[in-house]
Amino acid sequence: MSDARSLADIKSDLAAQVQQVMTRYPTTRSAIMPALDLAQQKYGGVDGLTYQAVAELLDVPEIWVFEVASFYSLYDRAASGRHHIRLCTNLPCLLRGAEALMMYLQQRLDVGPGETTEDGRFTLSAVECLGACEQAPVLMADKQYHGDLTAAKLDALLASLADQPAEDLS
Amino acid sequence: MSEQVLLRNIDNPNGHKIETYEASGGYQGLRTVLRDFAPDEVIEEVKSANLRGRGGAGFPTGLKWGFVPKDSPLPRYLCCNADEGEPGTFKDRILMERDPHQLIEGMVIAAYAIGCRTAYLYIRGEYHLSIDRCQQAIAAAHARGYLGANILDSEHSLEIHIHKGAGAYICGEETAMLESIEGRRGQPKLKPPFPAVAGLYECPTVVNNVETLACLPHLFRRGGEWFASIGPDHSPGPKLFGLSGQVKRPGVYELPMGMALGEMLEVHGGGALTGKFKAAIPGGVSAPMFPRSAFDVKMDFGSLAAAGSMLGSAGVIGLDETASIPVVARRITEFFSHESCGKCTPCREGLTWAAKILRRIEAGQGQPGDVEQLEMLCGGIFGNSFCALGDGAAWALGAALKHFRPEFDALIAAHSQAG
Image (cartoon, rainbow over all chains, first blue to last red; front, side):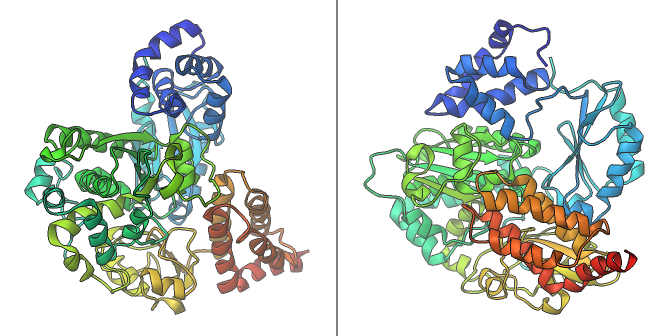
């Protein structure tokens, strides 16, 4: 997130890409979602300072940015761990054991859904359908899908992610 | 196995590349359209082939295009719905990841038919690989003259922009999707006016699903008559079915419509994971489930509607004898409750309430009268919300209560006896 960054830093980081995105639409308001996405890719989440920066870059009211950021579930408005694990718990995954795997992950990481481990490595979320039901049970770790999960596969995944840096964060 | 049209490149590791696509006849449909068809003739051909939308409603595609006013001075927009979020549905992801040029070519043809120069491809944000592959496909199509100004030296020009969704199932509803592209919360709008008249930026807009658009290159390369000859008269053309849940061989299958549900699950899905099937959901979780006794229902728009369900997204979820229907109903209702956009009271409050009762029943705290209460809630939600989310949720829960009431009663009775 943007703890140590000033509003001016964020605006200057995002300005060129946001300008580019604005050319795709006839209204600047349409660029709010892409601009929030750029901010999230850059800082790992969005917060009040990023809303202000996006609003100023697009010359729209800040409330418009907040309305969007608070509606859509993929914008991380709280600090996330280095890796975000989103386990699908919807019906096709549930029918193939997702609820037991959720319990297993909670025990392994010692966190509840929506929480981050004490060492800041992992955030665990239970999410709605990931659209990969043929691989159920499935999760998304950062940007990568992992399917046909078992407890052993989860162990291997956690081990492989533990020392990896987060993706796309500058 | 019938001919694979939409999935012919599915197992090719280079299926997403333009060279592979061109080698298998790709962009020939577009050449034919630009050479031999006026825009109105494209619409007529799609009407006569009877292509029906593959997104859920099954609305005739040519008819939808025909609603775009001919005399409007405003720009026209095409929006591709790739927000696929209904549990059990993953066919559009497969198309975008493995053979995205079908979609791009289809969008160019559709844009030509309606006179559109700017199109948006709304892909759900979780689909990172789909987004990358479609972005690459757009760039490759540009480089070959299939996109941009004066496509294949014609007067038709088109730019396609990807708009990433950000995790809201409701954005699969067309007016909510348009709100989302405009930079707002994805909340549905009352229709009319329909998007064809006043859609994106209040301009005439057509919204089509990925699979619908992906059918177009084939329809024009091989002709409307060929297209109409596949499957039953009222539901023709190649169709993708996603099989998931407790089936032995989950996956996406291309099959003609009109096959019996049971045959699809047994022959193509490989049968039940353990024992026998108990029930199945034919078209994503909003489509009411069928008990095994009704597995001879035909998998097409009309037959499923007549039997009290719908083809929807054609996401077929098998439930075997180990599945608890109260648990299934609880999870489906929780999904819709979570994904309600909050605009309408019956959907927002009713589904929260229903999910609460279902969790209570599952936890062994059910009370006499709970099933009646759930039925009352279904009746209060169905038909009383702006969009189909509330209807779908109530319809799905209602079917579980209707076909499997003894399972709910048994859970409630066990508690009453224990108490």
